[in-house]
Amino acid sequence: MSRRLLGSLAIAAVGVLTACKDKGAAAPTQGSAADLDKRCELVAKACGDKAKHVEKILDECKQAAKKQVAASCTDKAIATYDCYVKDLCGNGDKVWALQDVRVLADRHGKCVAEQTTLGTCGGN
Image 1 (cartoon, helix red, strand yellow):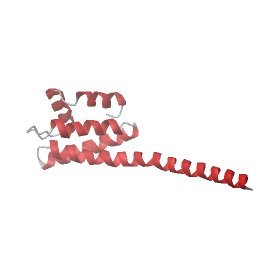
Image 2 (cartoon, rainbow, N blue to C red; image 1 turned 135 degrees about the vertical axis):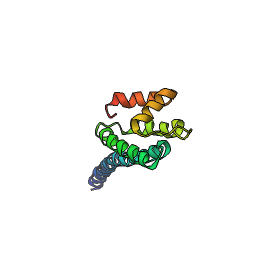
Image 3 (spheres, rainbow, N blue to C red; image 1 turned 120 degrees about the vertical axis):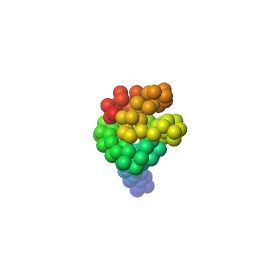
Image 4 (cartoon, rainbow, N blue to C red; image 1 turned 180 degrees about the vertical axis):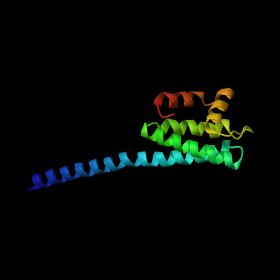
């Protein structure tokens, strides 16, 4: 009788571990998409020249984010946008559109590796 009980407990433990693993695997995808939207807001605010440009950058970024999530490039996009905020924008250069941020990065030689990685992912 104790072998049967131990066997049942082992099967139950495997089931619990599998269920927890499945839930953990689904959560990062949802969180990553939300994180990417937050990064879009940060990039728009840090890089945009005027309110209308901030809105334009935000809209363009969110459109690009949909493609990046669909192409499983979320982590690469987040790294690129983090680089824009940290190393590129906020140094006095302001832009009007998301493409201008990319041009500015090329001009200053910053975030090039991140942009290249994102570009090769297919979500750019």
